[in-house]
Length: 311
Image (cartoon, rainbow, N blue to C red; front, side, top):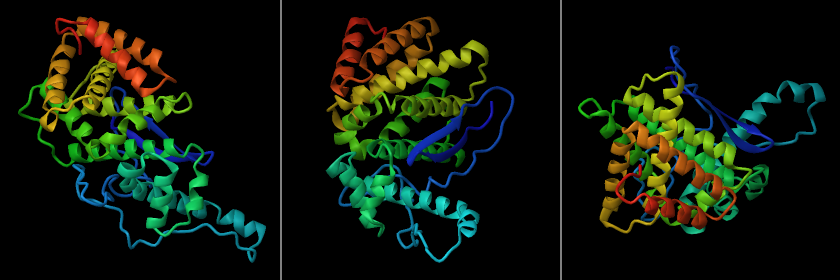
């Protein structure tokens, strides 16, 4: 199994994430990404405290700007075209990172992005350079959270004394806790991800997440098992994420109990394959619909499985 290769690039003015899943036998290191400019929730303001840590984008770092100089020749502009593009991408990343602090108040919106651009001294007109705007902000957050999870694993997160199901539950919990500062606005993020134009990137990002978790657990599966395990874990993650939105228990204790049960059931492979089929049907029926409609569909399916046979 090789290390996830991660490289983000702009396509048509919007952020698109290209990552490779780890397949058997070959292992390499992650490709540093210019878009992972500090921690995604490090710029949280007010009294909101993020569980993601204290790393941050350097606010004193001078942001590069894009200018159209009339004093340069066409040949020189072509020669220097790569540098301005890279700098502009970095500037967009700084804007997205700064925008996250405004999400709890303004949601995953252009308004939050414009507020973020002002924070880093960039004209709000830069928001127009993102082809999918709100989706770019959500996808940036998802990428940053995955990078943070990978960093925590690589920095020595102790999983040695845990059995595989406990390792998986711990990693999923760490990842979901990163969404706490945005819980009131997370249904909106799910709705954005469920839009037909955004579904491919959304599924790709979740696939990379579950692949990273299986890798950290020490999974050495190949052939069909490789795909089955990732499909099952994707269902565990997504159903727990939706359950968390309806959980009002203290410190989300019901969510973590729900997660532990789903992970334990997931190790019953025969049962889990059927559950993955149910979940795929729910997702397929919910694409393009409201988040509430998707949540209702998943909850109805879970209700049909009385007797604890859910993930």
